[in-house]
Image (cartoon, rainbow, N blue to C red; front, side):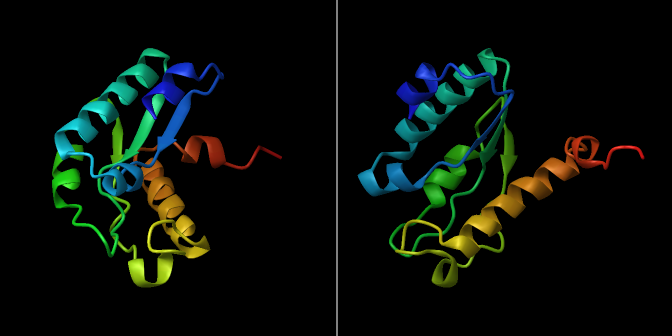
Length: 130
């Protein structure tokens, strides 16, 4: 992921980043995982982006996410979003790892709610004056 972030040359000002599944599947230790995530956040911030990052992993039936969740709590420079609250792995995962439509909607709503709480999005979503 870090290589893809470093190679990105687009003009985005906001990054929405969901991490955990791939590193959990690979068995990446939590300290190595969080170091890589922090490096990615740092690269994105250095490019002037506002970074929104999950502060909790979505629950997976095959993994204990406790160590990752604790590690994500230490990330700096990103606005952290709780994507696990309200996420039901039994009904929101297509294959035990990847979210289905309901899972994607739950994740999107978690990010949207966090953005609204930061008074960031209402300024953008106000209807134009008539």
